[in-house]
Image (cartoon, rainbow, N blue to C red):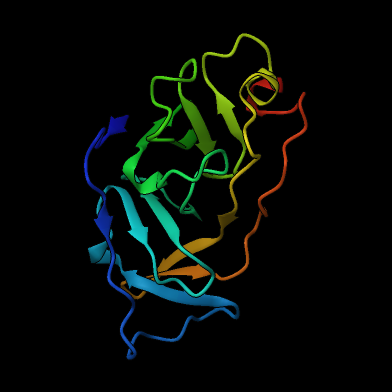
Length: 165
């Protein structure tokens, strides 16, 4: 499912001062659940740094707001939920990279779908590594996100990537 190609993202307002406390330590209220539409939403005022929320009918994910390659705003990208993988396609490189530069919302791993060899995206295109991803959950009508990345941004090894499994 690709959606919102070339569309402006929803920018979520900062959570109000009276937002509920998170029921889990280290999590913060980001927005009311009803304010987070299907597709990509920017959460610029999150305590852990700017985020992009990716929502489909069945999933919700949070990752760092900018592409680790050249810093493009991921909320302007495309969301894909296919083959058991929820990913965001970088808006800056929809066409430049073979298949586009994709970021896995579960692991943060970056890859080019059209690259013939696993890990070749890194050597050929000089990607800056993986994106930071954050734990996220919904409860009592609110979206809560961990302030600490579950998978910190890191430089991916040249031979590792989602296609190398």
